[in-house]
Image (cartoon, rainbow, N blue to C red; front, top):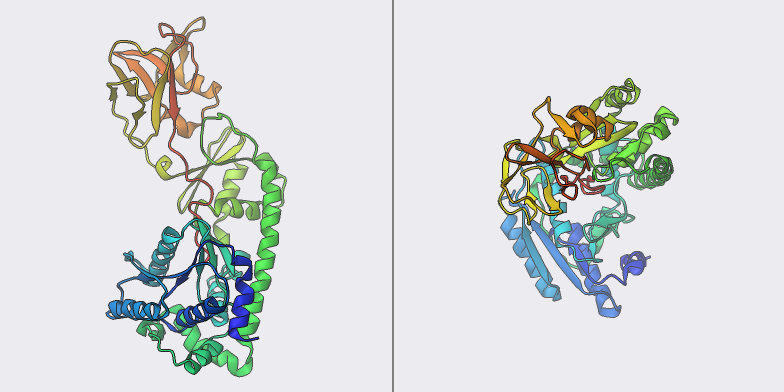
Length: 444
């Protein structure tokens, strides 16, 4: 099958997308894909085609690469967007550049649009070896998926079954000129070391090594898919409604997880946490075991890369984002009680019912407070929060409504405080935990 025929076969299910955007680096692979797409567009009814070049600014020739891409697209009458990104400095410039690149892809992808990447079979083999040497599990060894959601659209790698040699042969036959990133020759970088030192030696003994490794990655993708299906089934039993219902934190019932084998527990939690944080290596899951096996009245915490798991009232709760730092506990005046009030680092409050005519303030617990409840007398505030099922990690940030020195209402709790209007309620929208999938690490 010719390259054009192969590409058309892979792209046929995606012909209803509103736009195809090619990630164009100017290197061999993406330039070949650009020309193949342009040739297909001359004879096929395809969606509008555009290109996107991410300018990292890491190389002295970065401007020249962008100009090369502009010239190539102009010759084919394909619109090009050049997106300049800032790469964070850190231990791995390669990783930081990749993360910046994929963030730019997601940002520029229109709803329902398709982003095309030119990674090929040899790239897949290198990725599998890298993941294997880093101790990745089945998800990691699945390497690069052929397609996945990205931003508001989809990412597709239509050349994963094509080898680099075939792409280079086609490019030379067409007289194409491409740019070479000098950093691709730096064998201090792990991928380059595998590409230039290891895989060629393996190919001396196993000529089809890239094909075999790419096939292994496909098999791992199938295994990972089966493990995901099992995780969804196991999590369905644990994703019961949580109390209090106004608390917007991801949580799971603990009991349905405890009856699973240790391996199934880890599999379910990996799936659930994948959208929230980077996952720890196998040997660091003792934190989960300590949280799971803690005494009934304990409130253990397992700290992870982007947040924490807490245990309370037979559930495990995920805290991330603003929940990881205490809000400003200073008294905050509420000059216009008819309008919602934004609390720094702590969501928003508003009133239901007629506001009293005197100046209002939002305060927080200091410890040792007691409330006088109509018909119940003086009660310890901490005990009332326990009775209401408010988790310990919420109690310190629970807003309190005061007029002068009189406590009028506790956020989201309908307590009949003596001297307060029965119809007055303080409503609180807590800081939103990151929704599932927002922090999902890109499978690149």
